[in-house]
Length: 441
Image (cartoon, rainbow, N blue to C red):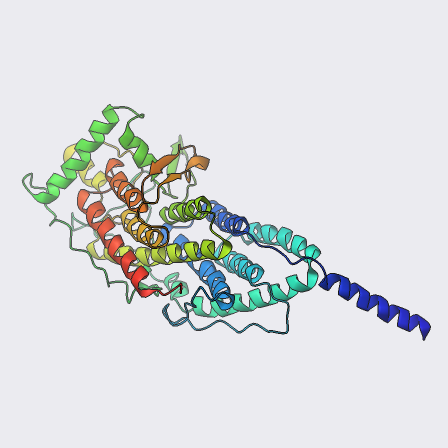
């Protein structure tokens, strides 16, 4: 009997010790690390720009919802995002660390959305071991709630038509119409994500809510507006390449390239060089804004979430137009009508020309970030440093978006209409996101 009492007392003592441990602290840097890990894996897995935007959006929304559940300064997105219902209520008898639960949700959802799950799992397991050692009860309670929210998110996520688009037919190239998009060298890839306009939007009403004005009518007559745009791309390219690789225009083009499909040919061997997508570049800018202002964890998650939602809807809107107008790229026309040896500064990505995807999502992301940090937010963009490119400095998010747009002309992959109308399309969409999301009180 005495031995049993001693054992019970020892057990209570152990439980008491665990409960008296320091609470687990989650910092903005912990969240940045999770987002960076997702970006790293997406580069490795070579996700297309539209798919990458989806991978960023859902985990950030899940984390934000847990944040809003415990922070009166933030509002739930339930009822604000299409088809999104409130997340489960937390068990008030449990020791839930909401910051920790939010990060766990982000990690778990990210793992479900990429291919190389082992890379996220390894990252997760190292954190789990640390947190469990710090405070096992708090970790287990927080993990259980975070995973419960993740399951709720998955049910919503699975209804966005993504899985259905995986089995839809490939894009059919119209070889009879000279205005229609044709696959471009060196890989001559099929058109990427031709059914992305069928993905359920997050904030906008539908994929065709922000249909831009059409491009100039196709004509290769030398006095036509369209031909003048083709010739302008050719002349700008020749002008900046004559200056050499050190020209400012080439530096701008390369900085905003963000093409995960760049193919390199060496003899009979072809391989891909891996880069971030346009959305990932703007997620990187969101991180810079958060760090530069010493934003707390809540504001950091808010920044990522709002930016990723604008980017995701931007891709849905842009891709809707791309496969409607189905416009041929400058490289194809210049090679056929003007100079058969001409090559663009940047490799042409594998989808129709109009409007420019980078221009649209840059315009949208800039509006989201401006709504949080203001119009005159100067920053140094080091997002491309890991890919061997120098830092570029901007006086505002909108200035960065304008440069991202014009970079596509400097790169020789878009006409003027696609970048100017595209960035305006994104700006209008971004303003709609800002005006129709009530994320803060």
